[in-house]
Length: 322
Image 1: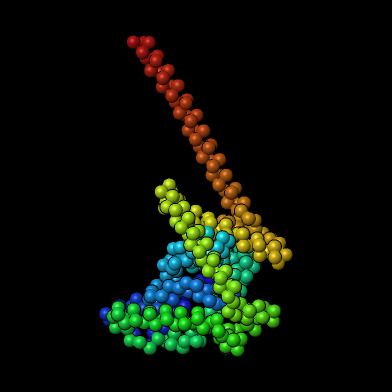
Image 2 (image 1 turned 90 degrees about the vertical axis):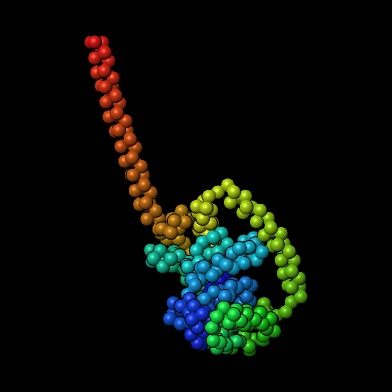
């Protein structure tokens, strides 16, 4: 899953640092940090550090290696949980927009499940900032680009150290930073087991990295071929359709696992972010417009045909009279 966090800066950046670019949506000076983490272990697998606080999360995430080389990090069937501001792709999945979710409980139930997963990203950032308190208020005066680079290197260093320390934290240390009170004892035991060093799992991950590297190379060839035969509009449309298809697959799987029934949506309507009634109304309106166009074309054809016969006959009669 991916999420963004603002790394606050204790002092207002200098003029040469273009301080307005650090001014974030909360009225503070900060860096924009994007982290892609595993919801099971909270380990950071990719990040984007260096963007300033005014940068949108979606723009910063677009610079990540996961976006540029997804198959290097994701096996077949893997995907990244996002929120609604990150857009759609065939390897990311987010909730329905709030305005759409208000239409049906089918949408709201899915959004609730996504929220329960995505809260783990807050745990991940809390864990990181709890270990390195400097990330709660970076006490460095940023006067120019060199100071900015120095600060970002320090942020990256904390994430590297955090990932290394995760493997050696005991339950007591994790409980200080991560709230597991809402999960069952079985889930807590399973989560603790995932944190333990495991040579066999390390070998599995090493083998998987080689497999994913080959998969990414094949995808690069496939992408070049698609770019040669498709327009940018077609590529964007295919990307959005892939994102909707992934969300629909997960929506169906969620309801099946919980033994829930869809009330007022269908697969076709959910792909369009509509209820079944809305989709029926839209299709009926489209059919009515098509029927109007067909009738208008038929009427123009009939008028044109009658006018053409009259004109030819008149001209022909005049010719014979002369």
